[in-house]
Image (cartoon, rainbow, N blue to C red; front, side):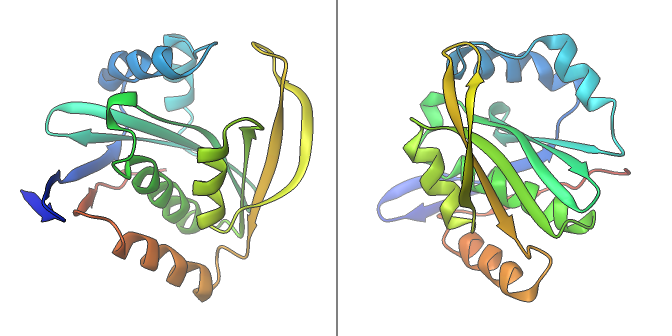
Length: 186
């Protein structure tokens, strides 16, 4: 199904749990967007940690166009990674992936979300602010590939009704449907 939006054809986006068979496509994106990409074995080891991890891919048709990961620690959800194929930037893929991570973390009992983002990545910081993340500090030299500092951001009270309303509002602004398949078990 394809939705029409402001004279543009906007495809449906499927968000599904990442599986081993997706890792090769994920690595193709990883190598385009990160100076020091994760390895195949790192993704496979993360996928094996189902009780504390959740990884999703975004698919348009048969193409993997983005991915994101979540690590749960007690009542905190930590966004471990999120990336979108550069050819699909500005199509709200990152928003859809972050919606899936936020909802998954809440379902797993999170009351707060956290992440690190490069100080130079203002586009990502703006996206995170829309999700209620606020800067709380800086990790010096966090990105060893470039020795760049990371901005640490947190979103609190994500288990409250107001945060659910925020997620619903963000979801309602998307130009086409997002079809989400939840992980089978964790």
